[in-house]
Every structure is written in structure tokens, then in C-alpha cells.
Length: 413
Image (cartoon, rainbow, N blue to C red; front, side):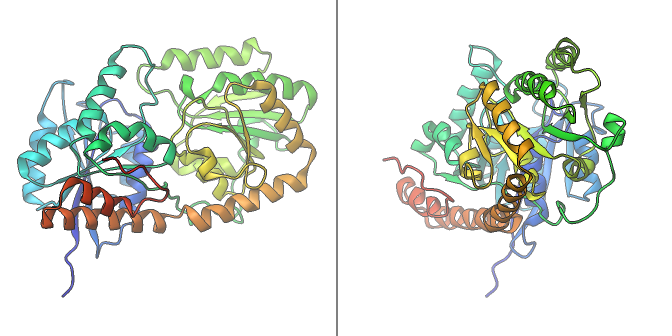
């Protein structure tokens, strides 16, 4: 007898979200890739009143994804919990899949009241400092929610170690992010954006793509750019991204640094719609990521899909994503001279750039496709539902769910 499709509500707190971030990329990927015969899904997002035309929402609608927006006036409001409970009942949902800290907490409340399964997606707390701030409170509350979830899905073995506290009662499983390789096609010509950004096409472009935030290391990128530019007049430097709400001061600092480092006309800080990212990547010669914190970066996966040679810092899941010297170059975080050194190597060696780019694309095709991501996630959903239906003890449930992890995770007593 055929198994009916599972009904999953993806729940995202987007009250502080404007652009497409990693969590949106994750949700978009799954909504696009899941087999509707296996899983029927809807993305439910809490937003601030009047913020229904932000870039990430425009992109979701452009992709014609199933989207339900819930306006929540205050961070203490519970309109999203009420609406989520209504949708669980009306959609006969089996699983709430929560996508960040507030969503984990509200999702836990709604799922437990409606007696359905809860899965948390964990990408780390990358927007917060380590001091006792709002971020520290969110981290504490998020761990408490993770401890009560039926499963915690994270995107790298590195991030799984941070979700470990909650794993004492919840299985933690690694599902590497997948990228839509049909959207990133290196053999398809793209518009010349070098002329648009730099006024000329005969330049060699190093680029960064991602949110403009201190953990991404844009200032290190610009410091390296100063040294690279002094050695090679062909080089130009492109930073694509926007600052999350509350971080506009850092974006201003990055803009000032371009002038202070003597890079006016050589470096550009701007943003483009998500739909233009493949074309942007097609106009780069090297993707550079100088991050201090990562989970499993979509920007790097997309660059790999476009056969770009990559210089990335040794953070997060980068060593799970690429092999140093084979499908990318990895340097220590904060090491500007290392960025400059590897940039010089790639500038001088077109054959190496080509070899790294080809290997990067092949690695994505072998390990990080949407199909692989969707299949592993669906298997976890099914395992969670079977374990709940059979009333299995937590330890046995962990063993069953964790067998679907992309990398081994510690099974706690």
C-alpha cells in the first residue's frame, strides 16, 4: 500500500530578515527538491508588519514556492504560534521543521500543543557575539528547544558539535546543503557585469558573496585587496551582499575602508537580486571567503558549481565541502598574508585555476546536489515518524535517526 506524503510546515522567524540568507537558501532548496509524492511542504514565516516585499519574499514568490506570511508586531507576540497551530490542524501536518532560534521555541510550543513531531534546523549562532547579549540568551533558549526536538538537522559535522548539548535527548544528524546545479551552469554565457561594476571588461576579478557582517571578514578581504592591487594592475574586487538589520554601521565601515585603503575605483561594495547571483559568479575569476564563522556556506557551494577556484578560510564545514589543493585553497582565518599569497598563486597559474574549478564542480555533483539533500532529509522525516509511532525510547530513536547522517555523529547515552 502506498505511503501518503508527509505534510511538513517549515517555520522561519523572518522578523529581522531582509535578504536571502543561509536559512532562506536552505528552505528554498528543500521546497524545490522534495518529491511531492513523499513530502508536501509549506514555508510559514513570521514577519514584521509591512515587511511583505523584502528581497527574500520577492525571491520566494519568483520561485512560486508555497509561502504563508504571519505578521508579528512584537518579539513577544504570539500571533505566529496561533497561526502555526491553525495550519497544523488545517493542513493535517505531521512535522514542524523550525529554522532558527525564535522559530525553534515557537515551533516547539505549537508542535507539542498539537502533538506533532518537531525537527530543528541548526546553522549556528553566527550573527551574535560571544558576550552576554541578546545572542547569549537566544543561544541558551535554542539549546533548550533542541533538547526537546525529535531531531536536530545541521549542515556540517562542525556545527553538529555545537548542537551537542541538545543531543542528550535529541538525535543530531548532518545533512550537507545541496545546490541546484541546473541554476548554476558554467558553460552557459552570462551578461558582462564587469563593465557594469568597473567600467571595463579586461580585468581580473576577486569576489565575495554573502551578508555584510563582521563574521564574514570583508575588512580582511579589502586588506588583502590592497596588497594584491599593488602587485597587479589588472585586479578588481567585488563585494556582493547587504547588511542584516542592525549591522548597517558595519556596512558603512566596509565602504569607508575602500576609500581609506586606496581602493576607490578598484573595489566595489554593492548588492544584486538573488536571481542575478549566477551571473555575478560567472563574472568572477576567483571567489574569496575570508569568514571567521561559517556553517556550510551556500555561497561557496554556488561558486563551486560555477567552476570557480576558491580561497576560503579554515572555518565551519569548509573542509567537509572542499579538499585543500584539490577543489579549493584553505587558509587560516584572519591571516591576510595567506590570502594574498594564495591570490598570487592563482593569478599566476591559469591551469591551476581551471583544475581547481573543474574539481569543485565535480565534488558538488558527487556530494552536494539538491537530490541528495532532499533524499536524506526525507529519510530522517520517515524515521522520526516511525519512531514516534512505535513509541521507541530516546536512545533507540537516536540510533535509528543518526544512521541517516552524512558524517558520523556522537551517540550520547
